[in-house]
Image 1 (spheres, rainbow, N blue to C red):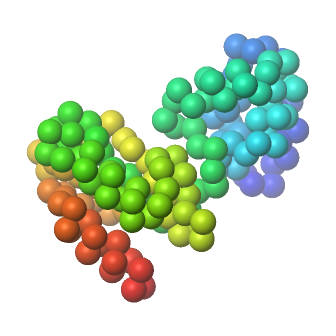
Image 2: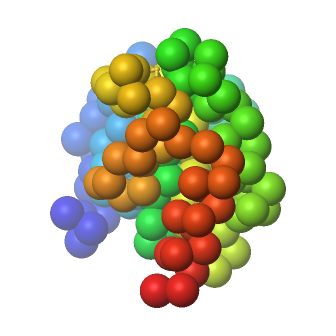
Length: 152
Ligand code: FES
């Protein structure tokens, strides 16, 4: 997939502003994120401004503007997790990694996303590290998991 050029991916779509979401999804699927260059090319192809693209794309949690990290952390802040301290856990990860949601650490080791529900609310609050789910998280448990990762 990665060897499909951006131009050929874009050329599969009519030059209609209404194609913005499917184009963004396609480019993110190919590249893993929406780089500045990609946004520039999409703007030219669909004849809309880059600001309009950022405005739309930043509304949807699925779109990323930073390259994905080696490890993907997802913190649930859906209702069940929120009630059990999901926001505190998210703040701890942000502070520890010094990044915001949707960003990747400078060394490319981690990226961080906030999600609305991971489908296991009874285990709230929930965090996922790559494909592993950690239930009934606490700030202390989270620190231990991140410290363990750093020792690897
Ligand atoms: S709200 Fe967090 S898993 Fe459902």
